[in-house]
Length: 121
Image 1 (cartoon, one colour):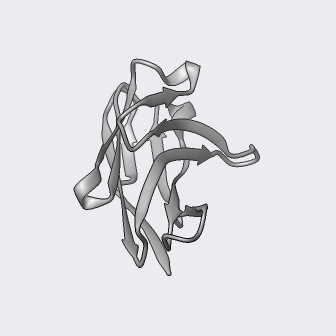
Image 2 (tube, helix red, strand yellow):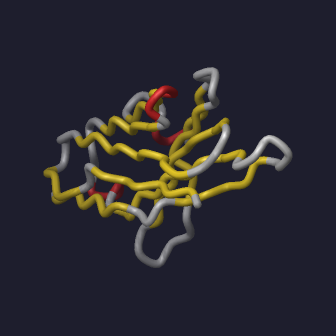
Image 3 (spheres, one colour):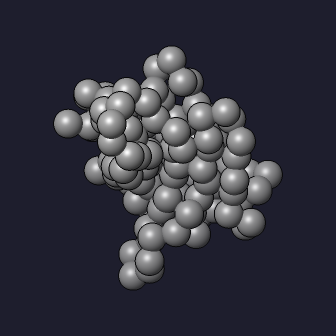
């Protein structure tokens, strides 16, 4: 089994900051890309940012410069630093990871349970 557990969500005022964490645990041999997605009420889940095992990052165009993704490979953990938060950033934030469970298998995508971020005006 592979588990992804997010933490760090909560309520913050507009202009404030939050840092989300997502730790992968369980039985696997490697993780390549990890990422963050979000889903606001009534909307589809959308990309926030991804990061490769080598540290290459990709961001949603609207979030470049305000959100920063990073990872700690030795800890199998990915972070999302969110600054200058706006009410429209309110959503459930999900992390995912492409995980190779055994040497003879391919990578598969796993998702966390999500953490709520609410930005008040």
